[in-house]
Length: 276
Length: 332
Image (cartoon, rainbow over all chains, first blue to last red; front, side, top):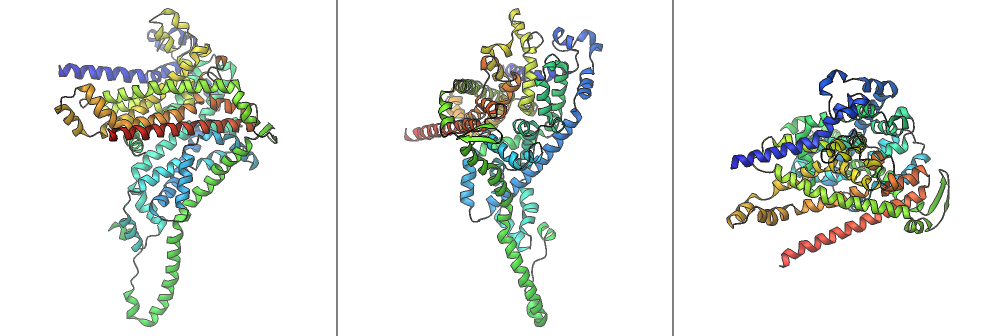
């Protein structure tokens, strides 16, 4: 009886997990199929595997600056992630481990803005970008993006667990405050850094709305923008294969990255939710 | 001990007493060094927080204030606008398209919460069973859908839901052949369900992660005590599990509501715009259309503030409910 239940439980889990990842499998199949086979075969044309083709990918690279978009995405996401993690951990350290003038009001204002939907800022931020001439530049994405109230509070929470005695000992030994942050506080909150880095990377890689508003030159596009442009073109409505190839190439790097690092990331994500 | 190695050597004041003339020289150097040292210690927190505060003020607080001002004017082009008082807000209240966007958004959010939370909790309960093997593999499989950005989900589901060739229709055709040519994305009553389907696929897994963490934090002893008292599985779930994971449920309701009210990318991609009969129009999409397609940044700001007010009121409502329901058990 117990064995029977064990089997049923696992069968159920396997069925549900397969259901969850079927769209991925379908996507991979669709990216390698000819357009007419999309209608004729649900997954792969099993009887005629020689009908599979790389044509979708070839066409994607021939007709769109897809490499360029990938490099833009990679460069922007990495820069964004580095700045936001550095600034948030530095600021979070100050909020957790120092007393300074204006700390209370600052925390209050930060908490109040946490609840704001970012979309309310879109029109006025757009106007600001026009005024300072940052339209169609990456500065418009990277500089406002370096502010993360959520990240600051997350790091503050993590840094609270750094023992004061340790910081004091380092100070007596002649460690400068910046070095205390770098060599003592950061190593202690390393799991949080890992989780937050991945979280920011994901957010950066997938971000669409703000880049869509400020970037105009197609050669500056990131992957979501490039793909969005493809959906918008009427002649691509019929070309499912090439869209699927683009989608596959856009999500694959992230899935591989997370599959490698999933243990730490998921643990960090969950602990963040439990504390918050 | 590692600290001593990596940091500068400590001062040794006893040396000053041994050699007075040299000590005086050393002393003044020490004092100078000390003031510098004190200064860096004193100013460090301000310097650490400064980059954040500057960017926060310029790119968050200023635009926030500015958008209040902007919401009182009408924009005819990027550089031309005029003050119109409360007209934007007055128009908003009678704007039938905005009302439609609001109804769509609220309907979506309710549907999302009603399905996502029970489904995520159910998955977490299954996965939390003590005898489950390869838990981390399952966990990653369920979670992996969350890695796909909204834009890509939109693109993927527009193909999955395509008539004749899409996987979903082909599966439904097993039940009834007529479903094979179901045109989800062009049928008004099916547009929002299609969006809901895509966004549930995206977010049930991450909800499961939160619930799983919460379930594992529930005190084991409580289950044992309940079992000794003769509580069955349902009673244990009802009286031990649910109260134990209550904070996470409230957290998920809050996050789901906030995300639901900000729905934008999935319908934009899935329906390539507001959809058939504007049935896929959401509040943020309406904001985007007004501000960045029609070019009236003032009206877009007013829509943004309407969104803020709605969310703040809901937040207050939820926290009041939470206060009240957390007080009742103590009184009884």
